[in-house]
Image 1 (cartoon, rainbow, N blue to C red):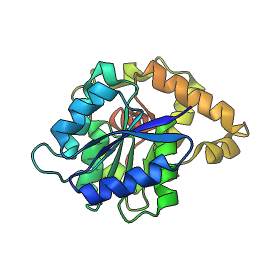
Image 2: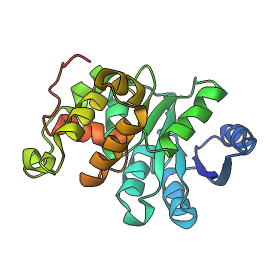
Image 3: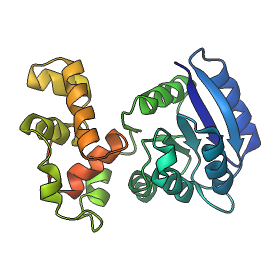
Length: 224
């Protein structure tokens, strides 16, 4: 299956470099290029890519607003956003996650890291660079979600095992690490994660993590 990627960055040279890198992969292709957030939204609706590689700082409509608009569009439910930026600071990480981004990576990442990030987010998993630590998620996302009525009742649709897996995923553990702690296979963990996502209408793992903190399933400062 080919991962279809839309590039959104105001620097033409960077877009060209990303296009060459991505198009060289057998399982990826670039389906469009946008120079600002508004164009990114329009091209996303026209091409329906699997991944939007999104810069934050762009003239006009920025990447955060474009991310929120793309993630709120029901017709783009299959499109995920990977934020790629030089501005890797706490507030941007939190805003990107709240907007619905599935991943956040600094532009200092090497080509292998970037390609791995695209594949990770395309698979529905969350990806945060080392600078986007769990402490950042706790600080900015561990707040009651005013848009989510009765968060405790919202989690009632989950089984005990799904809640357990969701809480461990929210502390930053990978499927393999969760599997080791629960003495099950990574495939079983992945199944529980995807069932929880489906029941809670979470777009991806990143949004599942946000729900875990906003609902109080995982309290701030909980160790992994």
